[in-house]
Length: 430
Ligand code: DGY
Image (cartoon, rainbow, N blue to C red; front, side):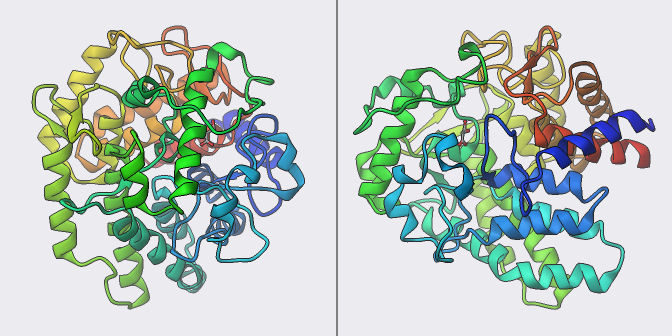
């Protein structure tokens, strides 16, 4: 459905959050550049300002490490005191940044940025301009995909080990409750600024933050070496969504390479080996869903969350499996709106608390995309409509209460606006 109001409102959120070379997720709550935020934001920008979408991706790639990692956060020097933790929490991380003068965190995010470079790139109809962008970005995109496959590989599987809940983007999800249970304490306390603009009840708890900061201490002490870190940490996992999105990024990177006439960066044999390991480690036959794997205790984390559904966007799952997972999850949702991150039938469910239940626009975007890839076109169109309805009703919120549909977290949120634009453009072309 053509919706000029939603279109214009979404564009004005993106314009208001534009910091020049990147878009802040929210002026009040997140005043820097975040990795997968910028990826999703570029998809929305590409619907109306392709050049600005390219700048969004390139500014994130410019913050890469010498090893190829693209960090989860690039600090804006003008706002270092407006957000905690600041770069002072990650001093060793700063010694890894490729470009002097750029300050970053020491962890990463699922490599949606690579897929966004591919998807946003394809929106440019002038072939020469499209190829010029891909040509410039190609080395950094390859470096990111290779970094995850090489520096995050543990003996025994070709999957990507993550070292912090912030890497998954699902900070306080019940998937990561074993970190909270470990009761880690950081070397020094942190004054939280995240509860100044958002109600405490919508955010992770102080106990969660103690774990997040203590993991940063462990990473710094290990100089970001996965082996050294794993030996000292209770948190090291194969995140189902990270793995699915790595596979997707590798396939999209191969597509870019073929457009550029370059050799395929990720060999078919590697993709096959990765897909087999994905099935072995992530498929939970008892639940009928894809879940995470705890690399410390060597066991599956059998929590049913929307991460297993969003993982369909990786393109690794058969159509039948995808349909079963979708039907099962919707039953568990018991009437909750769109796709919520934790089903209300789970004892850990909290309707408003960040990753413990709410509906997030980017997760719904991934589910829509994954279902389309799996051939579930009707279900994908239905979910796209539900997601857009929620945004029309409650605005460009950071996330939404899945029972009442009300807005939670920060308002005027960039990826909600950006993905509304992208979802609308696909609705029109359907
Ligand atoms: C981060 O930095 O990724 C956290 O999600 C902020 O809440």
